[in-house]
Length: 125
Length: 447
Image (cartoon, rainbow over all chains, first blue to last red; front, side, top):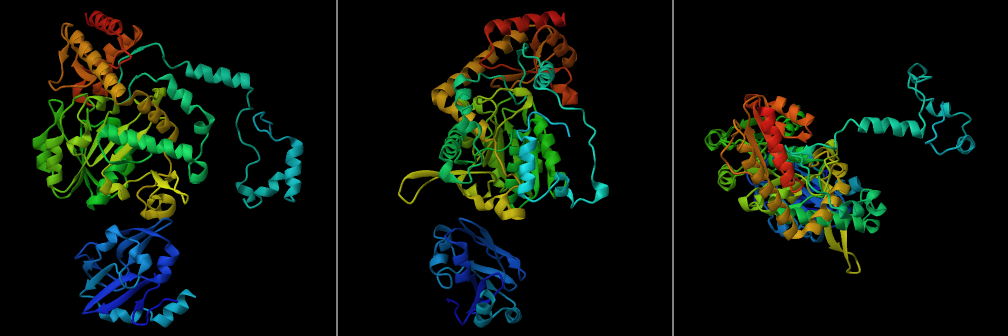
């Protein structure tokens, strides 16, 4: 069960990693496995202001197009442009190379509403 | 209940079916419907025999006129339908094929759809097509929505030269949507560029143009499309496929989304349908394009195969976030159009277009020789043009119907300030004799 300890998790299967004051966002291993081969990623626009649970892009596979939701409120700082040509990176490395975007000026208090690795593991079982 | 002879089940079979599911009377299957909502009889006449039905329908169909020599256009044209089109699309494999959800058993349908898409792309000079929409009008609506989706803006500018039936459809479709529409006027039969410049700004998602427009006027939209792109809006161009045999393609003009009515690619007029909506766009917008798309790929053994692709944007998967609520296409008509395009090929399509243009040019000069008949617009045309008569065009057209001609369309029907204008279309089907006769008859009617 691939659920890194140092991340926060959402009910919609996003993960958050706080690094250098930015919140990096992606989808979990469980999510990429459920989706199957990912064929396209619609990245959010830079400088987009999002409230928690706002649309933060779309991950498309052969069988579904799944919305990515903002785990915390903030402003889109950078997006992983590698995913434009190689969306399959998410399947291969969902927590590391497959990061989708980062948020700046995020509300760190909202992190407390997210799940820990243990909670997420119980959630998906 | 009267036993219609068109339902195959016998009384014995019905009893057997009811017994198999453990029900003694068919009314028990409706027991969930409250008693007061059930009806014990429906007030419709008794069924008719096959002979009576055929007689009835034949009488109705007999109200149509087949005998009039057709110079009627306005978006739908009397072109030749080659026998090969019907011979192929009436084959059971095409005629009764269902939606190709299971590609393994639908390679024929899918490959033909792919060929249709390829043909339409080449004809319009664009990059990727869908497997068709319902008709030219719904295609314009879908294109407008696509422009809004791509630009994330909500204003659409529509040229008044766009087919008025299609503009009405656009109104109907968008009635309850949070969209704004503004009209771009026509001047001398073409887009009034100064007025366009006044309303073109960064709130505009897309501009809908038609070429040739409803009046038959042709122009090079490249300059206008550049203006549209300068404000970050998209150019939607509605075209006449047969004209692309000789005219500069909308792709070359820089269009972002091209739509058209495909009826003229081998389909009869049929009093309004079935018709064929086409949509073509640039590769970068393919994920925003609604409708079904046939794609080419390889199976696990490396053999070429065809599938429906990019389905996840569609209504049955994406629901309210889908690109459209459209869930079907005009596959049989698309097969017909694919056959037509393949049969004629590049040279044949050019030849048909040249015939149309030559015939129209001859007719134009012949009709202008008639006293008191004037040219309405100075601009160039393909196979359709407006002439201004000395009186109400509707009356003249009525007189000409009595004399065996569907001579044209009364433009005043949609443009009240143009009551004396008649829109005349000429295709490869019209002969010199027919055109001469029209001219002579029109002259006598006007005397």
